[in-house]
Image 1 (tube, rainbow, N blue to C red):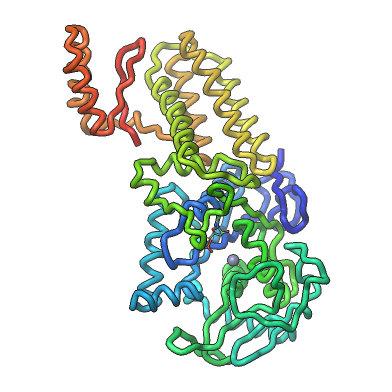
Image 2 (cartoon, rainbow, N blue to C red):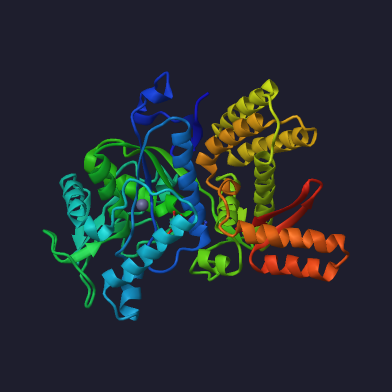
Amino acid sequence: MSLKIYNTLNRRIEELIPGGVKKDNIEDYPVVTIYTCGPTVYGYAHIGNFRTFVFSDFIRRYLKFRGFKVNHAMNITDVDDKTIKGAAANHVTLEEYTQKYTDIFFEDLRTLNIEPVEHNPKATESIKDIIDILEKIDEAGMLYEKDGSLYFNISKFSEYGKLSLLDKREIKSGISFDADEYEKEDVRDFALWKAQKEGEPFWETPYGQGRPGWHIECSAMIRKIFGTTIDIHIGGVDLIFPHHENEIAQSEAAYKEKFVRCWIHSEHLLVDGAKMSKSLGNFYTLRDLLAKGFSPRSIRYLLMSAHYKKQLNFTFEGIKQADQALERIDNFIVRLIDRKGDGENLEVKSFTDKLIHEFIETVDNDLNISGGLGVFFDFIHKINLMITDDKISKKDAENILAALKILDQVFGFIFFENEVEDPDKDRIDKLVDERIRAKKNKDFSRADEIRELLKNEGIILEDTKDGTRWKRKK
Ligand code: AMP
Ligand code: ZN
C-alpha cells in the first residue's frame, strides 16, 4: 500500500514520494517537509479557516501514523494591509495588536486538538530572509522598482500560471498592483516589497524603507527553514491564485529549482452556498460555537469528516450529527470498558487487524477520511452486535481499545475518559442509586428531579438493561 494524494500542480493523484526518490519502505524515506499557509492575525479566525487547519493537522497526523517522519512549518502573517489597519483603528502598536490574535489563534488550535508544528515563523521576524530572496530575484532580473516599491515582473518568468492554469493570453504584465489579494481577471505584476506610507510600520533595507508584500514571506520562510524543495504545501483552494502562483514564481526565480513537489488544496467551508469569509460577514468563530454549547470535538469531527476535495456546507444540524456520531463512539467505549469475562476470541483479533488494514487502504487513496470513518463505524456496528451476544471478553475489549487508540492518533476526537475516575463519582453514584430507588418506589417526581439536577451539571443518564449508566457531556 502507498499513500496517494491529488497534486494540484500536476492535476492528478500521485504517490507521495518524500525527497523525490522512490523507496521500498516508508521508514527509508527522508523526513517529509510540509508547509501550511497560516493565518493573518487581525481578528479571530473563523471555522472556515479552521477547516483548512484541521485538514493540515489530519495530513500531519496521518503521515506519522503511516510511519513517515515530519518536519512541519506554519507561518503567522503579522504585517499586511489588514493588520496595519486594525492596529491603527485600535490605537495600539502592530505588535500589540497581532500578538493578541496570535495568542488567541494558538489557544483555538489547542481547543481543537490540533498538534503544534515544528516551526511557526512570523513575517515580522523574517525580514532578513525576505531581503535575501529579494536580492536573488533581483539578480535573476525579475523584479523592478516603481515609486520605492518592488514588483515581480511576471512576463520574465515563463512558467507563470502553471499552478492555476492561467491562459497565456491572460498574462498581461507591465501593469503593477499593490493589493495582496486579487482575482484571476487581474493577472498583474505583484508587489514584493511596499514603500513606506505615512504612519505605517517599516523596515530599513537596501531597497529603502518599507514592508513586505504578503506573498514573499512564505517563499522566504520556506527557504530559511528547509533550504531546498519541500514535499508538501497546504492551503485552502482560494490560495491557488494568486498567492501560491506567486510563491512559485518568487522561489523558482530566486533559487532555480523546484519549489514544491506536491500542492494540496482543501475545499471551502460554505454557508448557504457561499464561502464562509470575514468579508461576507457569514462566519462563526470557534468561540461563537462553543458559546452556543457545541463541543470542540464535535466541531473537529465535523470539519475533519468530509473529504477535503468536497465543499462542506456548515449547518447546526451538521454539528448535531457530528455529536451523534461521537456519542456512538462514546457508548461503544463505555460498553468495551464494562466488559467482563475470560478468554480471548481470535476472530476479534482478525477484525481489529482488518479494521486498521482497511482504514489505511481507504485513507491512502487521496486522504479519503470519510471512507475511513465508514470503515470504522462498520467495525463498531459489528463489535456491538458481538457484545450484545456476549462474545467479547475483557481481554478482547482491551485489544479493541488498543486498536482505537492507534486510530485516534489520526482522529484526535475519541475520549477514553471513562478509564479515568470522575472526581465526583461517589456523589453522582449515590444520586443515581437514589433515583433507582425512587423509581422502584414510584416516586417519579424525585426521580425526575435527580435526572434534572444531574443534567444541569452536564451529566447524562442512560437506562440500559444492565442498569443505569451516567457520563459527563463534553
Ligand atoms: P487567511 O487568514 O485569510 O489567510 O486564511 C487562512 C487559511 O484559511 C487559508 O489557507 C485559507 O485558504 C483558509 N480559508 C479561508 N476561508 C476558508 C473557508 N471558508 N473554508 C476553508 N478554508 C478557508
Ligand atoms: Zn503562503
